[in-house]
Structures are given as structure tokens and as C-alpha cells.
Image 1 (spheres, one colour):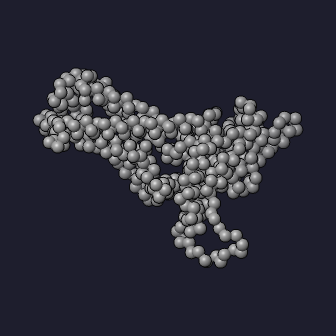
Image 2: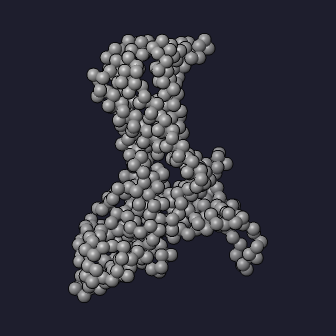
Image 3: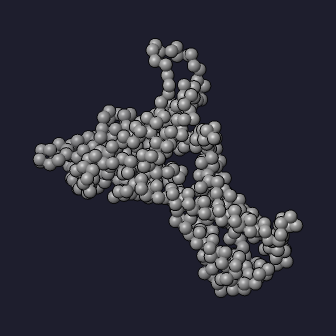
Length: 248
Length: 210
């Protein structure tokens, strides 16, 4: 199939950036979106042009590295699918496809489609951990976890930290990411000691990093490749309220 | 947003129930309007309760606007470079019209106070003759007033549809079933409010109230 892509090209953070159009010929419908970009990049290199920079790692939909807004939707038109797992068969021959980086003040563009997502790490560093004794692994049944809690915690823990929630949010908020991390640890017995400080510190880190505020629009959950539910934000609000009340 | 918003919704419901008294006739309606001025007496001097309520509502409105402005400003700062290709927001129409919808509602409230509280813009405009003020205000010849009221009330309805369940989420609602009920309740409460408020001008328009 033949398609046309319009890709955001930006040399570095000081460059203003612009959309540039490329024709991609004879692409297999079974190629992934990233493989299509690989083919385009090979052609660009052979032509002596600068290849398009984009983030990728596992290409199995589990690492959270790939990050591009395809036709205005983070990770593209397929629900619960990362860009690397999106295949060209979901497009039509002759389609014109727009590809842009995540756009947020907290995610400055490094080059083309690559953004610096270090601010998500800052949120994690502020409280996304548990205090655990090091040494030999404890016996697995030493700390019982109710099945329902384990399931909910696992659902939250599937967050791969790709940042699509921020990219899609009309407010540029990272609330779904933070909520997933707070729920994931807060639901487990091992996460209880830091439960209150965690939610307060992580939210503070999120605000400090320049992410917007949540207004419950629900865009984040729509584009999340792991389908993290919006209800976790309610959980975060509840935890936050209780933590603040205890602090006072 | 949530605390001030819910306070304002509670007022809207009480206000709507009061409005519906117009269907019991001029005497009942005017008597109700007069009674509002006597709430709290003799503990409080006449009309004091009304001014206390007005003060509380003003604080709520200002607090609501301040919080919304902070959120809007943070949102603008959080995305300095816009998307070139941006389809419509996938969330509900109500959710993406909260900000401009809120501005429309504010302008409406200002007009509404000038029209039916201070009576500056009212065609009858006699204090105490509430029934006549309303009836002449929505007379068929002033269809544009009715149209503006209708658009504004519908805007309020959309605002509440997102606002009500969003407030519940802010207070910590987190179960999927609770979310379903909260969304359904928000929709029902918004529709009831819109129908309740619009019943008055349309009753005047078709002659049920004259």
C-alpha cells in the first residue's frame, strides 16, 4: 500500500519545528507503524537526508517507549494499542497520516518525535516506591493480599508510563499516570507505610513539573494503551483527602 | 470546584421549586416571593436571611470562577505548542464545553439578576408583583428573551451534566458501578433542572400563565 505521512520535524529544542510530508510506497499491510517509519528512514538515509527520530524499544507494547500522536490520537486510532503494535492494515491505501510528538510543556521535544519524559520519573521519585527490607526474598505467603485488591493493583500496575495520558489530556495533566502509580502501591499491604506521604508528594511533584490540573475529561483513559480506568483518579482523590486530613 | 459547584446546584434546585409555584396562581407565587423576605424573622430583621444567602452564593460563584481560572491557566501553560492535527475531544460534549459554557452561564446570571431581581430590564418591573413581572417578561412579543433563557438554561444543563459527576469523582468516587450511577444521576438531575426551569417561560409563551 502507498501512503503519505506528514511528520513533525524539529532539529532540537531551540528549533521551532514544522510538519514535513513524505511519500511511503509499497508498504506491507502487515508492517507495524514503526516498521513503516523504519522503511521511510532507510530511504531518507540512502537519499542523504536526516532520518526521523522516534522512541522505541521492545516493540511488543510493554515498554512504554514509543510515543507519537497519529492523526491527533496518542498511539493512533486503535484502542488499547501502543504505536508499535499498530499495524498498517488499519489504514487505507492512499491515506494521509499526521504524526506528531507528545505535546506538553513537561515533555520538551529533544528531536522530531522524541520527547524528554523525565518529569514522569520525577513523579515516581517523589513517592512511587515502597520501603522493603533487602536480603533474601521473604516467603511469598508471609503477607496475605486479598484477591480483589491484588487484581485491582495489578490492573493499575499495567501502566507502562508512556505518557499518552498527558499527550491526550486537554489540560496536559498527568493525573491518570499518577493515579495508577498511587493505586498500584496503595492497594498492597507493602505500600501502606508510605500511603499518605506518597499521594501528597507525588501530586506535588506532578504540579511542580508543570503538568496541568485534572478536570475529569476522560481523554486519558480513551487513549491509554493499557486501558487504565478513570476510576483510579477517584481513588487518588479519596486517598489525597484522607492523607491531608490526617496531616492537619 | 466541587464544593462551590454543589452549593450552587443545591441553590438551583431550591430556586426551581420556588419557580414552579407560578403554576398555583398569582397570589400563591407573590406570597411565596414575599415569604422569602421573611425567612429567619423575627430572629433576623426582614430580608436579612436573603442578603446572607446572596453573600454566600456570591462567594461560591467567585470561588468557582477563581478555581476554574487557575485550572484554565495551568492547562494553557501545560501545552504551549498546540497539536497541528487535533480531532474533536473524545470525551462528552458537556466536558469540553465547561469553560465557555461557564462564561455563558455567568453572563446569563448577570442578565437574570438585572431582569428579575433588580427589575432594571424588566418590562413590568414592579417590586412585589412577581407574577406579573414574569408573565410580561416572557410574553410572546419578547420571544428573544425566552430564546436567550432557553439557550442559557440548556447551557446550565450541560454544565451540570459534567460538573455533577465530576464533583463526585473529586470527592473520591472510585467504583465502576458508582461511576455508572453517578453519571446516570447527573444526567437525570440535569434534565429535571432544565425541564423545571424552562416550564415557566414556555408556560407563559403558550398562555398557561398570563
